[in-house]
Amino acid sequence: MDERLKIIGVIHTPYKTIESAPYQGRFADEICKIEVFKEYERGLKDIEQASHLIVLYWLDKANREVLLEHTPHDTNIHGVFATRSQNRPNPIGFSVVELIERKGNILKIRGIDALDKTPLLDIKPYSSEIDAASGVRIGWYEKAGGDGR
Figure 1 (spheres, rainbow, N blue to C red):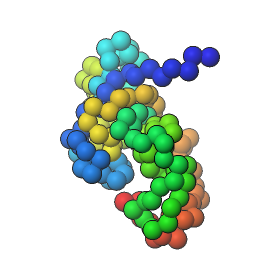
Figure 2: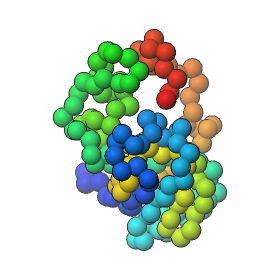
Figure 3: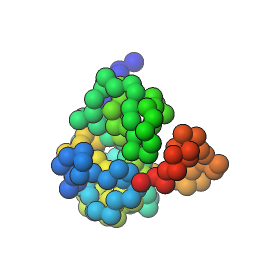
Figure 4: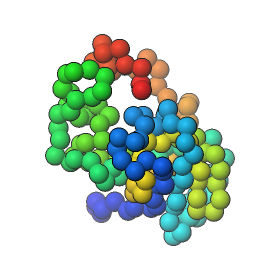
């Protein structure tokens, strides 16, 4: 099995630091760009037929040694696998974004929290029928009164 990841592009955003990025991409209004490298452009065929995309990216500024983390939602420490912290052994970012426009190998999107020049791992069409689950919960987050922001 080939375990190496291939970077297929780069994400361009106005966020230069972790502090300047939105806490959750879903609440971001800025129009950002995904640049898919030319050798992968053919893989974008028909992508403009999707209104929303799942974008997977490599959080290259993350601390990969962290296993316990504070969140902004409460004062307790949680395991990173129970949080959405960028700090984790395999720092893969995940956002569901709105596709605004495609021009060649460039996608204009809304709703991402990635820092500028973040490496792109993959893109998949989002389907509310397939990907959305009902009745979901995160117990500690609900106790903290979290609203997702």
